[in-house]
Amino acid sequence: MVNTQNSLSHYDRSKVSDGTNFRIALVVSEWNEEITQALFQGAKEKLLDHNVLDENIVRIDVPGSFELIYGASIAQLTDFNAIIAIGCIIKGETRHFEFISNAVAQGIKDLNLNGKAPVVFCVLTDENIEQSRARSGGNKGNKGIEAAVTALRMINL
Ligand code: DLZ
Image (cartoon, rainbow, N blue to C red):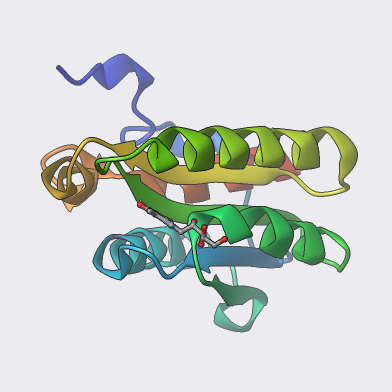
């Protein structure tokens, strides 16, 4: 069941900064590309909607979700105001899912503790592709949109 109270899909626009002067990196994993592309589109459209300039939205592609940590760490070294890490990890037959999901969550947490720009966690960790589709533009919204709102809110903390 969706908890609409915790969903950022319905948010208070007045709490979100104007993005005119912001530069934001979107680090995008190529694994499960159908999903990560939809998350990227959702995030980018929401950033544009809050006046972030197209040229200030920079996409950095990485091979898989595990590489989001390094990609985001490189982005933190430059002049980005926020970074959004976009990935989709789907459970398979082995324990790969747990190792990658935990590593990515821990790695991004560490970047938030040590780096100069916030890194937003936009990584789906799903049982199957249907769950991922539902959360990347389907009946459970688009987590890319929510990540964009989170990034804009974190910049001015
Ligand atoms: C290897 C792997 C597997 C099995 N599954 C996924 C996945 O569901 N989602 C994802 O983003 N990446 C997956 N990967 C790739 C790893 O994230 C990583 O790219 C490789 O282990 C190389 O470091």
